[in-house]
Structure formats: structure tokens, C-alpha cells
Image (cartoon, rainbow, N blue to C red; front, side):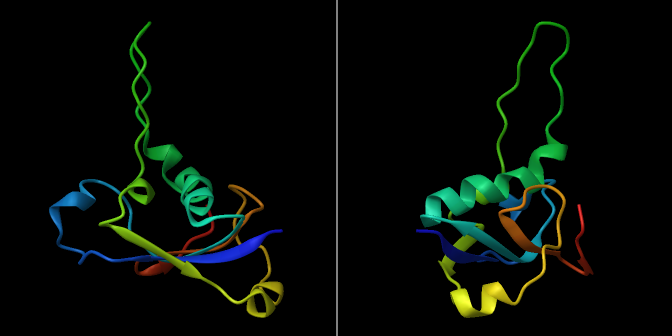
Length: 105
């Protein structure tokens, strides 16, 4: 059974943990569990990953992995059904609002 989750920032915008990550005011995700919702939302940060040089590989880390930056809470399924798909990153990401502007990655 798919559930819906709202991911919200829990740290203030001036928190040093944000580093160079973009801040999303709200992300709505369809996933079975809160941790799966975080994994899906990571795709919004994927474009920030720097490619390795030559044979080097770099680990990918997302702000959505940090529980001190984002919190996950249930989102009502009846409200989620009314949402139209707003991102092209992943069809399980129903809404992604970047701080200061509506995000359509």
C-alpha cells in the first residue's frame, strides 16, 4: 500500500548543515515508509552531485538524508489524489516547492 508523505525543513535557513543544498519548503512523496520517501526525495538533489575525475567515484549525499534538516510527516491521501504531478524528476514526487519559488525540476 502506498502512503503519502510531506517532507518539510526542520532547520532554519541559516543553519550551517545546509552547505550548498537547495532548500525545499515542501515536498510531497508517494512511498511506503518515511525512509523510502527520503530516498525518493534525494533525486531532487542529484543534480548537485559533482562527477568524479577519471576513475574516481564520489559518494552522493543529499540534504534529505539528514533528519536535522528535514522531517517527514504523513500527508492525507485524499489531499494527495487532488495534486497534479509537478515534477519531471520522479513520478512519485508529487510536489516539490523550492524555497522562494515553485520548483519544477
